[in-house]
Length: 339
Image (cartoon, rainbow, N blue to C red; front, side, top):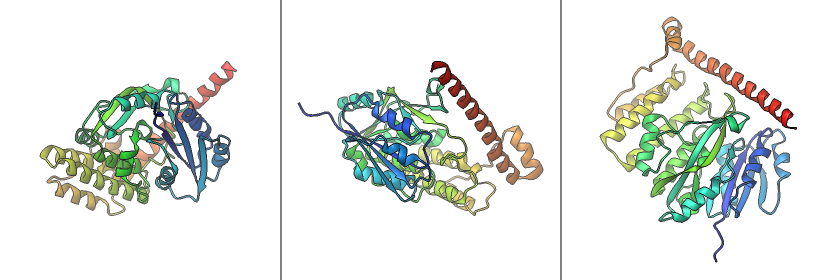
């Protein structure tokens, strides 16, 4: 009998000493028998590398490089991998023990290795048992065009760890874009989608996405570099969808996508709104003034968009930090009670 396919679990890590041990543990706990784990430390300044090296073995490789960003670390990990399938895993996230096995069983039943496999995912802070499952319109079998159209028109996404990607699709997608300090995963998996025949959703598999608060790389904030990266990614998203289908419905989805993100570029301190407006005109439409809830609208009327953006950065940050700290406290109490 031929051996089961090898799955490479690739983990880029930067200053992740709080989580990296648990993340590697979830990779090693996978019930799929043939796997390799590759951790790339991206020039961490804490104990991430030292903790990761405690797991080194014949099936766990740990390397380090000067800090170059998550996309560069993922490219390094991929260059070292030997797997028939690729499982991407962020350094603070977790996989359910049967996640890869369930998707590989679906892969074995698929018509070709160009079927892209996805899974469900949940947000959590410290306790996975309290994670809330919130299915979206992407949680089903879809054609690439329909998947991307739903993502852009409904402002949805799939977390990085949900995907299991064959080597064939990985090669066709190419390298991660190191220009993108933000949304490099969204842009990368668009290219994987374009190379795929279809997306197979495996409901019994599960990924746990840790909400790290507003220090997370995914937080846009007021960073010019992140806003510029987001703009590049948005332009590429539009290009990818229209390459699959250029029609009134896809152009409408692209306009909705631009309008969903318009608020993040206000006030226009960096001259980027003009580019958004140009994108909208090319699609045959225009940007619409963002709709605000009452608590932000009165700020806009009194002090303008700068006050709105400051409030949008500050208020959710305070709320999230309170939730995270409360969950952390409950996690400690539960661990003490069980010890």
